[in-house]
Image (cartoon, rainbow, N blue to C red; front, side):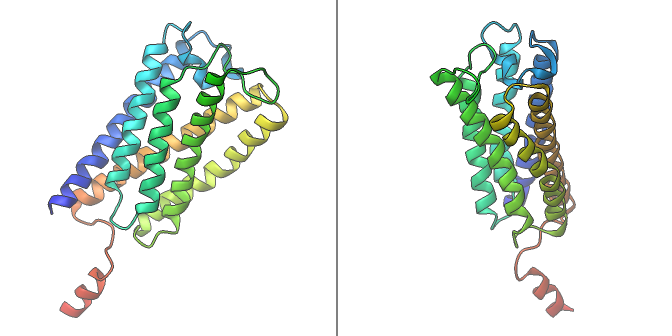
Length: 222
C-alpha cells in the first residue's frame, strides 16, 4: 500500500511538473525573439533571449517530470524507467548548456562545442523517451491501458522522429525541421501527461497495473 501510494504521488507530481514545464517553454518560444517556425525550440534559451530564464525553468521542470514518471512506473519496468532517467539527465544537460545564436547544427552550419553538446543532449533526451514508449509497449509489467497509451504515442512519434532525422541530415534549418521538431515535442509531452495521469488515477482507484501472480490468486480464491 505504501509503495502504491508513493507511485501515485510520483505520477501526480510528474504530470504537474510536465504541464508547468511545457507551459513555460511554450511561452518562451512564442514570446521570444526567434524567427518563427523556422527556428529551433532551443533558440528561446539563448543568452540574448529575454525569456531564457523561463525556458530553462521549463526544461528543468520537464527533467524532473521524467524522473518522477520513471519512479511511478509499475514494478518490473526497469528498462523503461532507466530510459526515462537517462532522458532526464540529457534534458538537464540540454538546459544547462546554452547553444549559440541560431543553435546551428551540422552538416550545413558551423557549430561550437556548446552547440554540439546542447544539440546532442536534446536529441538524446527525445530519443530516450520515444524508446521508453516502445519498451512499455512490449513490457509484461505494463497493463493493457499503459501499453495502449505507449502504442499510440509510439505510432505518432516514430514517423515524426524519422522526418526530423532526415530533415537534419538532408535539409538543415528549415520550416520543415522547425515544425517537425515542435510536433515531436508535443507528442512526447502529451504522452508523458497521459501516462502520468493514467498511473495516478489507476493507483488511486486501486485498479493498478497487474502484478504476475495476482490474477492467479484471484482465480484460486473464487
